[in-house]
Image (cartoon, rainbow, N blue to C red):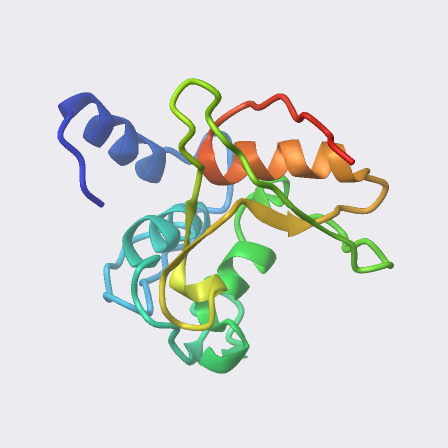
Length: 163
């Protein structure tokens, strides 16, 4: 994590150490750096913040014990989809496997938005992409596109649909 503002560092530390009502207090260690004394919620927040630019790892999940193979997303994908608060996990897949890919251009300066895709989600090495993601069950393309930009870049955008 790189940051030049003390308030941002403080907010990040508070995010990791706060469980916000999550009641499981069992302690685990991070399989990548061996940082211990983390609850499931804290490990769920710690891993993507501190290990998103590292290669995928194969390991036994410290929470459920299931072996996670690096070539299939490893622990990064597993912790995101299977542990931590239910509202932060990936929702049910759209049965059609639909995907939204968004090209965002700033009208003031003409620059395009690219986002960092963590190593665990992009075949083992961090990469930069246009915001994109699968449609959630019951979601439309426009709704998915706007959600993906907000999730991946923290921006709310207005989509201009062209033919």
